[in-house]
Length: 49
Picture 1 (cartoon, rainbow, N blue to C red):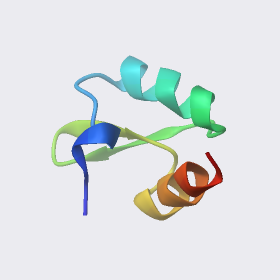
Picture 2: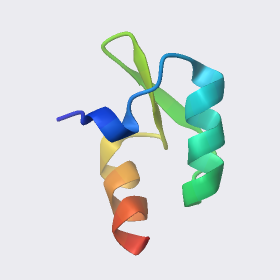
Picture 3: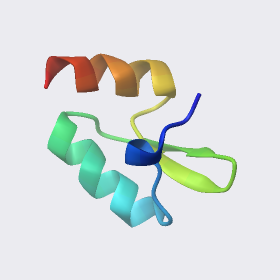
Picture 4: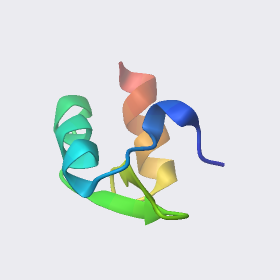
């Protein structure tokens, strides 16, 4: 499930956040952008923080 902290209006914003947390790509979720290739990878990276 998507969460507010990981949703971005633009692909560029999500790419910037992805770089900050160690991901190299983004994915789209219901018209919004999220860091990493998928939510599983996003959560893995966030747990490392």
